[in-house]
Length: 400
Image 1 (cartoon, rainbow, N blue to C red):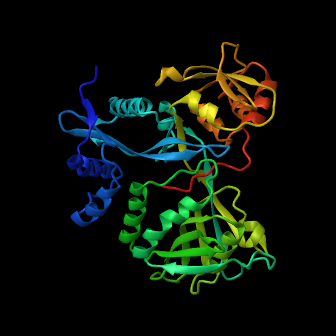
Image 2: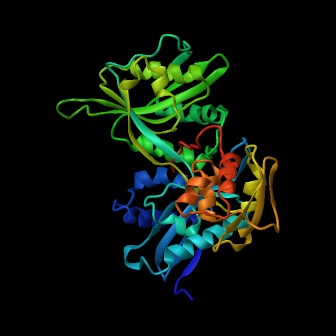
Image 3: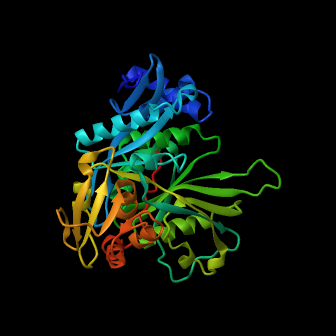
């Protein structure tokens, strides 16, 4: 039995939770002005804490929706602000917080939990799997040119921070969401606004207007203005384009920004076609491939029934979930969907590995070869490759 209590925090306790979390990141507490903005990013009733008798650990969440392969949107909880006080780590506090949070999600009908992991070895224990990846790339602004046959694009408009955050939520929501993308509730946009207002470098926002209205945007900062030898970098922080013309138009604008030497776009989709729109693809280079979002299937039956599948022979999978045992069981996956079954399993995997498969980021046959999936028949793993394949790589592009 644990020697601490876990409960939902009151609104007046959110700042203490924030300070505890910031301490785990080795940064000082928020001052009054910063907390006035940051506190608006807390969803009421969305933060839990562990007490013994004072606060020793915390985790918070917010409600949103997640797009799955095929286009359906399902209830999702974004998980963030997870931390345990340094003198109480490795005593079961984190495990208890994660279990309590997942049990609450399940009781409320949440289908997925979603987080960005500070350390890769932590969250697999609680059923979170690396479900999407990103790449960071750089473009030489002086030498890069767009291909002449690209769409001309529409009008671009620079906005100040005040105007931008009145416009950006509508632009984002109007863009078609691919697998892995999530809705951004008000608390997430408040987080983005807070980061923009506290940035030491000016934040610029450009919106692309297509024939039917705004259909893309990019936010960026220019760094290196005060350092010798004054190599200036334009860092793209957030960018979405609803059409090829919007993508070309935004890049035409970015490449035209003066007094910039290189453009770095971080946390971008693996298949973003920057090389294809440049006259010389070697003027772009991939600097890193990293973790995008870690997903947890809170309701396995609903998640499996909601996504689309490729055309292949049916495969029966056995899923184990020690944290939420109601998910454990055997499921028959076909091109038409998923149902529970009593048939013998072709593949056996845990709920963490299922999250890696679900969004098509990892092939079941590769996971079987690595020992993450037990395959009674190699042909079943290959059929599962086709069933779980997606038209494009999963990607979120939202931080929180």
